[in-house]
Structures are given as structure tokens and as C-alpha cells.
Length: 248
Ligand code: PGA
Image (cartoon, rainbow, N blue to C red):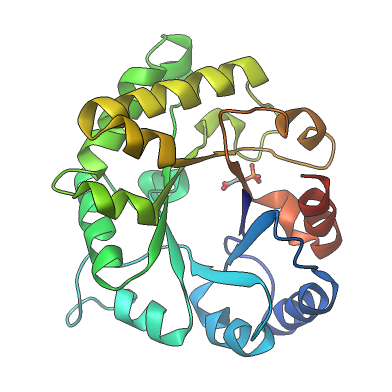
């Protein structure tokens, strides 16, 4: 099974999203080979729940508040996401880490809140260009993973996918070599094996994200050590998303 998470970020009007969802609802075939999740802006999750009812497409959010309820103007809780139809949530996207100053400790709390509300998690991790150049990639990823997973039980990892998204590859058209992605995925599994168990590391689903498109998917899909992809820009066109899904 391969996994595709489409991160729509802050794009499309209500009407555009409706058309996008209706297009996918009628055209996406359940080939049982690909698990597709649409990570939508909050305001469209409920609409997606109705338009995608009985369809083999999962719905997710793009962020979650670490608190359960109350004095958090502008935030969204796990219970709100779940009760509107979300089954998963992206946590730790680099745009949120940077623009909204979300650090590894907050991300750990967000993960716990998502687990409490029975939401599966796509945890994004990734290094900056300068960290990459300074050969600090694995040091950064280790810190991101270990702080994010602090206090978690091994069985809870089954609800989590890790998306390796080098910051310098997001929206830039530049991607790491397939060899480098493969190497990082193996190192991520080693961290999980050391901190939890070999079985947990083998079960962990690892995605690659950053400038995935119709062209580079032909080589990216051959990387054996990853389980799928997190797609931003390319998923905004429903037709392209379907072509990527059917190419896997
Ligand atoms: P991109 O975005 O595919 O446009 O690079 C990926 C992401 O930010 O999740």
C-alpha cells in the first residue's frame, strides 16, 4: 500500500473546492493500492465529509490546537476536527514551524491532542538548506522526531506517518536525489528502532514531500524505503493528483 497526502494549504475558494472535491469523488478509483488523504482548510472539511461520503478518500486537517477547548481564539481543537469529519491532521509542517513559531515541544503536545481525539497524524520533519549544507540533516531530524514522540507509547506510533520534507525542497522544484531520500528514510527507521523497537520502525510509514510532481514521480516512486508522498502545489489540480495516484 502506498500513501498520498494532498496538502491543499491555504488555497481555493469554497466554490473551487466544491468542484475539486466533486471531480475527485467521481474520478478517483479505489485501486486498493493507494491510500489518498486530502488535507483541507478547516472551513471545507464538513463539505468534504458529505461530498466524499462512501468514497475511498480520507479527509484531514492541516493543524490542531494543543489545547482541548476554551480560551484559544482562532484555533481549532482535535474534537472539532474529528466531529466535522477529519480522520487525520498534519502536524509540524515547516510553514507552521517558521511562520507560527511552532517548536518541537508544542508539536509533541499537538500530537498528544490528536491521539486523544483519535486523529491519525502526518508529522512533518525536515532540515533547512544551511543545515543540509552543514551536514546536520540527521541531527535536526533526530531532535524533531525524539521531542515530537516524547512520552508516546509504542502502539501509538501506528497512528503516525512521518513526512520527510526538506525545507529547501518545498515549492522550489528542487528535490534531493532518490539515494539521499532513501538514506534519510533508513536513518529515520533506525531512530525509531533505537527509541522504540525494530518492529515499530518497520511499521512506521514514511513519506517524502517537497516539489513532488508528475515528472519526478516516475523516479521517486521507485524508492523502496518510503511508503508514499506528501504533495502540495501539484495536488491543486485534481487531474494531476489523479495521474500521480494512478502512476504509483
Ligand atoms: P510542494 O509542498 O509539493 O508544493 O513542494 C509540499 C508541502 O509543503 O507539503
